[in-house]
Image 1 (cartoon, rainbow, N blue to C red):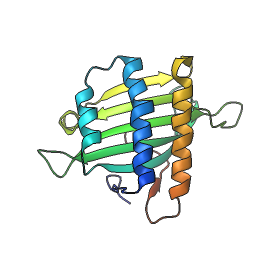
Image 2: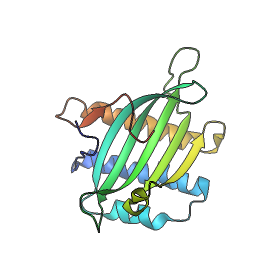
Image 3: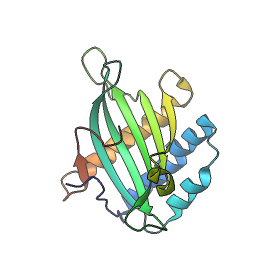
Image 4: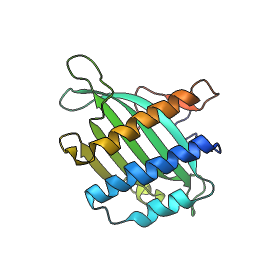
Length: 169
């Protein structure tokens, strides 16, 4: 299965989920980090041929902490190079504490990846962790809503990719 495969979701539940992610989690992340370059994000979500996928992963960080996570990845065909995608990846992660995962979000990362930046191996990263409680409710709701959405779609042909690791982590 190729990592750069993606699917166009035309169902109302998929569009509703993307709107929730945009209006809740992504807008909160942009505000929280004072990110200035929202034009790319706006144009991506306004694109009629938006691609959308959900990916699951496990990872171990440099401090040997274990995480499980889910990524909402949205993209579109890059305007100047149609073989490539402009992407935005929203990554929610739950850290294993006392030997178990508790379905509580501990970290959220937002990778803003216009193809022009990807070509030079660059991206913009917005980051939040649970030590800052200000936006916890918004991020926790986004995390659980994504898990619920993915569970509803599970079992459909190739809707969800199950991966041990994502290429960009």
